[in-house]
Image 1 (tube, rainbow, N blue to C red):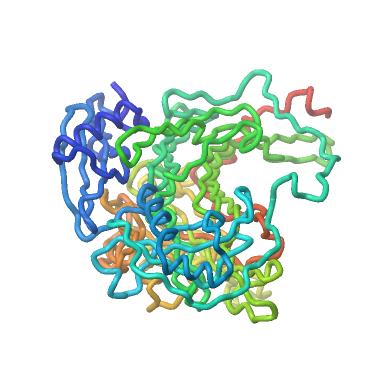
Image 2: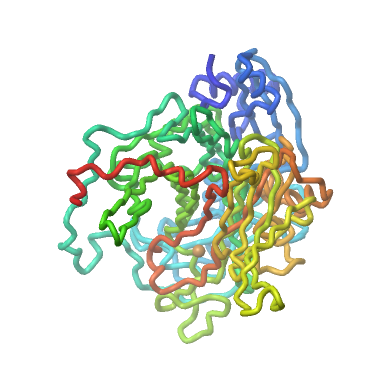
Length: 628
Ligand code: CU
C-alpha cells in the first residue's frame, strides 16, 4: 500500500488523466495541473491507527474562456470522487497558449509596423516574452484570459535579449482564442546596443587561480531515502513537488528519546508577488505572481551534479502531467545532500586548557525554478541542533527597460548604457502548517523592550521580554520589528519541557519589507498577503493559496485578507502560520548582466522544545580532520 503522501508516479498521473477525460466526456482537454490531493487530518489519524487511506489526485483543466474544471480522482477506487466547474477562474498562463500568443504577435501587422518604426525588419531576431497581464479594471480584461507580450532584440540566437529591450511596444493577446486584441506603441526609445553576454567565451579572460574543491563522503551520506521519505540524523520528512507551489515538505518531525515529535505538518511556498514600482505605462502593470500565475513547480529545473549541487547527492525526480495529458518526468528536480556548515558549538576552558568543538552540518533540500528572465532557488536546511531554515536565492536576469541617453530613468536605476532596471520587490508567502508536538498550537509574539525606568530599574539597563499570545486572526496580522528583536513562537500549550514551559519553535524573521504599493492599488488588493509579514489562521483544508486559488487575473481581495476578516480564534487549536518575507530590489550595476545571488528567508529554531542543547551528543570531529 503506497503512503498517501508518497509522490505521484507517471502511471498514476496517466490513470488520473484518463479517469478525468472519461468523467468530463472530453477527448483532449487542456490540463492545467495534476497534484497530490492530500489526506485529511482524520484520514491521517486512521492511517496511524493502521487503517487505509485512498491515494488521490487533484486535476485542474481548462473548461471555458474563464472557467476551470477541478476534479478529485481516487486512484485507489479508480473513480472521480468530485468534479466541479469554477467560473470565473483563470489557470496559470499555459505553455501552449503562451507559444500561440508569440506566434500571433509576430504575424500581426500593428506589431510589425511598430518594429519597423524601430528599424527592425527581421522579426526572427525578436524575442517575445508573454507576461501574466494582471488586472486593472479595463473593459477588455473581462471574460478573457489574457497575456501582455514584450519584445526584445537578439543580435544572434544566443544573445541576451534583455540587454536590448524594445521599449514602448506592448501587445495584448487573448490566450483563449489566440487573437491579438491590440498593440500599444508608447513611443520609440533607442534600443540599448551593448552586449549583455554572461557566457564564458565573451569574457575578456577567465580566472585561472581557482583550485578544485571536491566534496567526498567516502562512507556515503548519513541520510536514507525510502520512496519520498527522507531520514537524516533525528529528522524525518517527506518531499513532493507541487505544480504550483514547487517544493513541498510534509510531516517534518524530530526523533527525541525514541519518540518522533512532529514540528510541521506541511511547509511550502503558498504564493509570491513581484510588484514593480515603475509609474511608466510600459512597466507599471508588471506584478508577477510566479506561483499562481505561472505555476512555480512547472518551471522546475533538472539539476546537474557538480553545477547546481555539490557532493553526495540524492535526487528526486518530478513526474508532471503535461497540458495535453502526457507525462513529463523532470529528472533530478529536487536535490538533497549534506553540507558542512562551520562550527556547531565550541568552548576552550581557560583553566583546564581543554577545548571541545563540534562541526555543524546541515541537510539541504533544494529546487531551482526558472520563470522567464529570473531564477528562484529554494533551499530548506535542517540542522543538528534542531533548527530549520528556508533560504530563497534570487538570481537570473533582472527585468530591464531602455532609457534614452541622458534621460531620467524615473523609478529605476541605470545599470548599463541606455539600460535601467525598475525598482521592485520580491515577496514570498510561505504556508507553515504547524504541528509543534501535535496540532494544538498557539502563536506568541515576543518583543525585547527596555524596562521602564523606576525603583525596580534604577540603572535604566533593564530588558524585559514582552510576550503576547494572539487570540484571534486580526491580532496576528503583524510586521517584523528588528528594533525589538520581534519573533513569533509557535507553542504547544499542552506540552511542557522539564522547566514547565510550553514547548515551542520560534520563527525568526529577517528584516523583510511589506508591499510598498498603496492600499488601493490593484496589486495590493490582489496580493493582500504581502501587506503583513505574519498571518495566523485556524487550519482549514481549502485555505492553501495566500492570494486565493486562482491568482491569475484575479479581481483581488481573496486569500488571507478575506479569510482572516472572520477574525476566528487561533489559540490552542490547529493553526497555520503564514510568513511573508523578501526583499525590495533597488537594482545595482553589479546585478547586470546576470545577478549574483541575493538571499532572503527565515529561521525556525527550537525554543524550549528540548530541555537543553540537543546537540551535546554530536561526536568530536574525527582525528583525521582535527588535531587537538
Ligand atoms: Cu529583483
